[in-house]
Amino acid sequence: MKDPYKTLGVARDASAADIKRAYRQLAKKLHPDLNPGNAKIETQFKDVSHAYSILGDTKKRKQFDQGEIDASGQQKGWQGGFYQEQAGQAHGSKYRPFDFGQDVNVEDILSDLFGGRGGRGARGGPGGGRGGRTVKQRGADVSYTAPIDFLDAAAGAKKRIRLSDGKALNMSIPAGTQDRQTLRLKGQGMPGANGGAPGDAYVEVHIAPHAYLTRKDDDVHLELPVSLQEAVLGATVDVPTVHGKVAMKIPPGSNTGTTLRLKGKGIANRKSGGKGDQYVRLKVTLPEKPDTELKDFVERWSASHDYDPRRKAGMK
Image (cartoon, rainbow, N blue to C red):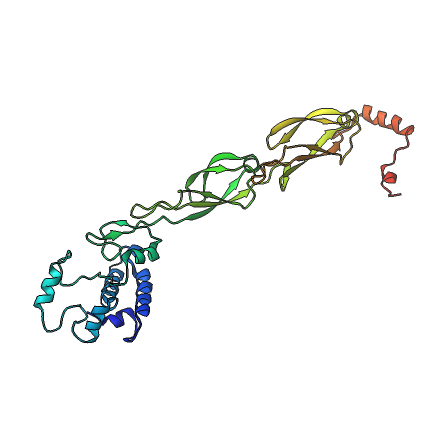
């Protein structure tokens, strides 16, 4: 067996606290549950654990320093009594390789390593062994990005989305979700080990732009084309919102730039519980090809009316 001081990397005059600290650092690095299937690391972990079983025990450390026991923990020059004493223990071996010493609790060590999640199992070492312990390990979290429809993000929806790696996830999209917001999908990450809970999936949503609706905070904005007759005479028209179409009255004599408000037809605010508004800006639109009748009417009308919009705007 190796010199336990060299195994832990501490000097012979190291304090009990220094020895304990060195062991904890090595145990965290070499624990078999963090290095599954690595026989070399598992052997190193056993050596470290055995070294600490001597140096972490005040009585055994004193016996080792005085040459009464060797690095394996056996009394020097006498193979009988010590072997028989240890053979009577539960392990039935010459020495107990995972005795943590009198001032260290295995639960304390495992709590440092895995946040206190422990269980029974069949792996060697303080994290397990024949008749020992294994530690439940929570699965790793995973991160994705996903495109989301503008209306789904604004009004809320439940969707099954397919991610870039081919995996499909069921998502609840809360009303009012913002672009680049990250949604947590509990339990849809990597599976846990030794019966541990699965990790979570974190999905950063990228909201696709809408064809004609835009968002500003909790309000929605729309530029609505209206006909000449609707603007002049007034009308009731259907207007798209994030909640579906609603009827809106256009006052007679409306002009391009006239903005109308649809109260409460914006986006839900999750904190306040209220909703924003939708603002509809009118845009008077002439026919693509004005016919002769419209031209004749405008000529007759303009001959008897002093109408100069640029003068009214102060441009003359």
